[in-house]
Amino acid sequence: MTDAYLVDEPCPACGTEVPILSNGTSDCPECGHPEVLPCSICPRLTSAIDTCDWNETTRCSEFPQHYLYNLVKEHTNG
Image (tube, rainbow, N blue to C red):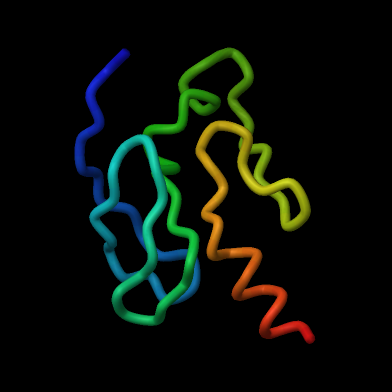
């Protein structure tokens, strides 16, 4: 098991650099987007798979789903 470390990732909503753990997700402190992922270190992009599998329904297979994402989405959609 490898130790987690901090990595900076751009928020997909506003572009702000967000420091997050390499094995998790974080909220954007600027706009509040609830799911900033460590995409730059994704093992899918450095393997033979070489494609991102993120989509609106299933999210990302490599990193844990942020539990608040669904709560925010449910609250804002109805």
